Amino acid sequence: MLEEPVDRFLIKENDEIVEYRYILRDSSTIYFTKSNNGSDLLYEFLESKDFISLLDEIYFEKSFGKNNKSYLIVKNKGLIYGFSNLNNNKVNDYKNLFSTTLVKIK
Image 1: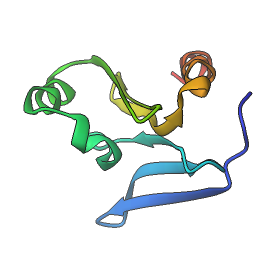
Image 2 (image 1 turned 180 degrees about the vertical axis):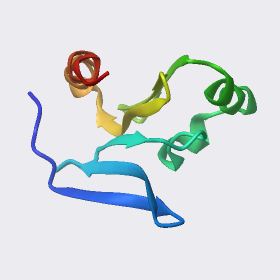
Image 3 (image 1 turned 180 degrees about the horizontal axis):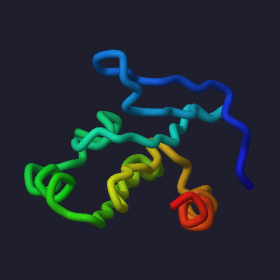
């Protein structure tokens, strides 16, 4: 079941919003960004070739796991989104949210 965020904030560069973050009660983060580098929430998991793919590819997806937490980065037609530090039992819920909601937005 999806939960309501307990906090939200924006990341700006040169007075332009580049990333939206939604913090959940368990400190998981759902994010949407326009940055070509993706979110710094996932930098520790990305290799040089991943940053190149983010710049060059229309679609890119990569997921990671660490300490029973899941991390996801997806680039689809210029929008980069995913989650960080998400409990493994919530992964399918949020992937479904992305696939159903973002299809309607495009």
